Length: 96
Image 1 (cartoon, rainbow, N blue to C red):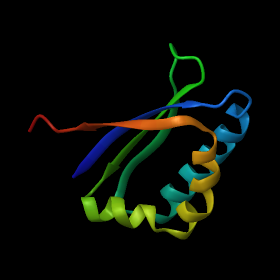
Image 2: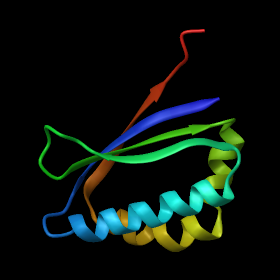
Image 3: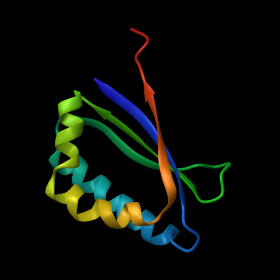
Image 4: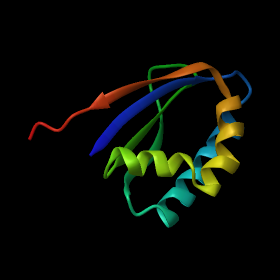
């Protein structure tokens, strides 16, 4: 299992484009990636232009496969272009 939360800040003026792309990517992931167990973007309530994506994969290989899907390769470059700087991943481990 591989689970993480990636936090990012979006460039000023790019929020609408980012949200549209994030929704498009989320829909494609849900429709095409059975080994992606969770994939959701969120607006961070207390951070101006702050967003996060929660991702959970059945394995590290599933996460790598996700990054090589046609929909990811099509949408991700424009999504990443909206990010101001970089993103920070926080890995999450089950208590069990």
